[in-house]
Image (cartoon, rainbow, N blue to C red; front, side, top):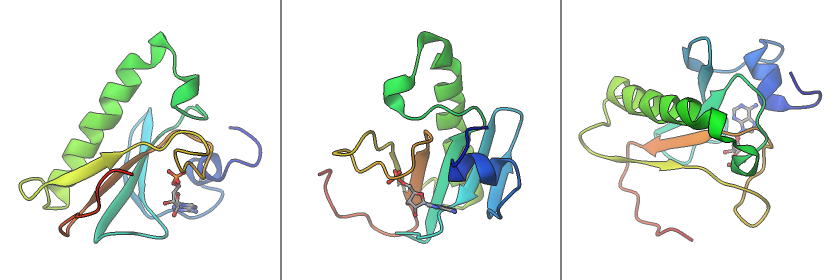
Length: 115
Ligand code: AMP
């Protein structure tokens, strides 16, 4: 756990999160400021601050995060309609929380283009 990291604190159960999935490597919880009916954050338990910090050893973890998003989309009933997976990286990428996370967004027509 990294001091002062809000996602580490949610993962540790120190502050509440609306969890939708967890296993030994990944925790997924609803975004506190959802931009769509489904807005879930898929987060590794291990503190990796951003895509910039990813290493070759994390390849499997990233794959699991995407498969986790796929299965949550099915649970949420949005798999067939479609959804968006987003990872923000760094200041200009709009990353606000410095703990790697994958946004799963769906449940409405997403019209805004990238950027
Ligand atoms: P990003 O801009 O990609 O770093 O996204 C961070 C996301 O974390 C934002 O969509 C926030 O609404 C969300 N967020 C911040 N604090 C919490 C929290 N305590 N529980 C759930 N989501 C949070």
